[in-house]
Image (cartoon, rainbow, N blue to C red; front, side, top):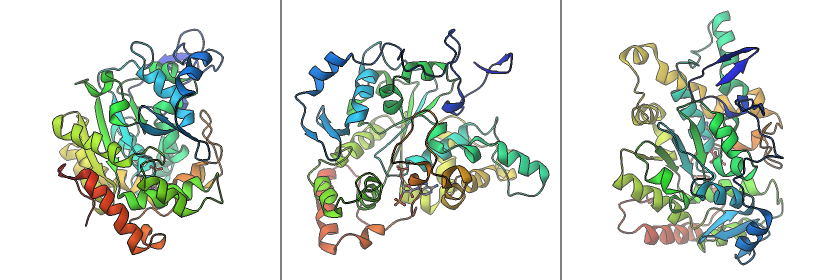
Length: 369
Ligand code: A3P
């Protein structure tokens, strides 16, 4: 339920989570940080959990349950994992999962545009006043994709999790960077909850991550991040565990886990959008195909289009979550494949490829071209 003026309206999801306005009278509410919804671990409890964990203060990481995670996410992850406390799944929930820098922003945009297309038709190429007006009103033209689809651990860590998640109309769309093994069974074993995973060549992921981390740590050498990735100790590492967890789940439960690759999206985005739509139970009708809706979604979410939008060009921050060094624009850099060759020697690339290949051996998954 949301409200426009005095008239409450029932909204079908997904809706941009930053548009969900919380009132403390029990309706859809925007977060009240003083009342986090009772799901965050108390300070002493949190201290006792994390005080003995290995840490990397420079990268602000903690090794929680064997995975290197951004320390600021950990309270949110604990809240989500808490049985009956944090995350209450609903029929129709769709979780977008990824390692950081593997195309999360793009997947958020594509999934949102696809699932919300009845309420918000993707604008066709601008042709007249009506189209212009429609263009301005599409959420993805006024908001960064991260303000449309919440990142669960950030939302829960900010104490906003259950309030905003409960207020969102179904079907809900949300995202996580957490390893499959760290998600609660209420998501992973739930036949009514779907997961869409996107992975990327780890070499390009690490280059992208380095550029991102440099916004906060301008002096960090590429080699330092590269070494920590090879040792399985950089952000969201071990990265092979992350990829394998979702890969294996997609093989065991293909009806609830869809495995996508960034490179495939680049190669044929329309094919991936159709796959995504079928997977979430909203295939494109012959009429929509005829009208070019798939192409409109692809165009709306294309790198050039998104990067050049005013909302993403600005140094803007999420109105709800804030991102500090990470402005809306920082999620759009080059948007292609193979940038690793500008940062790694052939020997470095071979070393990382060999590590990943060894870890993925026998899985049927490979990043070797
Ligand atoms: P590069 O740094 O290699 O350019 P994430 O969204 O998981 O943080 O990933 C960010 C990466 O996805 C960045 O890669 C970014 O440029 C790229 N990206 C963002 N939006 C994109 C889009 N619409 N199409 C293709 N790539 C996109």
